[in-house]
Image (tube, rainbow, N blue to C red; front, side, top):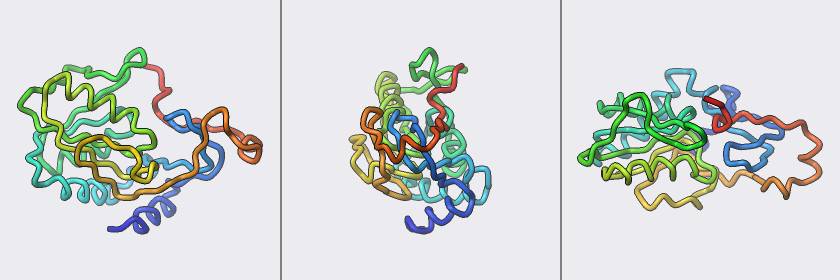
Length: 192
């Protein structure tokens, strides 16, 4: 599977949106990757998860963790394929943390799974949780790298597609984009 195959699937499933979006990172963009529209189809979820699981198959992974909400569906499928325990972290009062009785032990070899990375904020927060629990971070796997390889997690990282998608800081949004009504489809702003 190559990057063109991934993008074709996003286009076919309506997962690549055009308009004016505020990304989870806070940046503005004329494009948005709505992975949920793609991952609702088991064949694509399994296809993407299999590629990530294959890449990390020799890393002795014992635990997959994902940030809620976006990474959960993919992370669960990667965990199923690797046949390991799968958990997620979620925000409580704006802070990413383990809830629901989930734990990470010092002996765990951890793979973080995410759907889309732009700035990597959620993944960096999960990395801190892994470090706080003194577990072994083995890598980060994700579908779309919107940073085109610029985000560095200081561990093995693998994405199915690397793109340098146009994005603008909130105070640098061009007039042509300002004219388009804004949509904020990301999950970081969901209240719990």
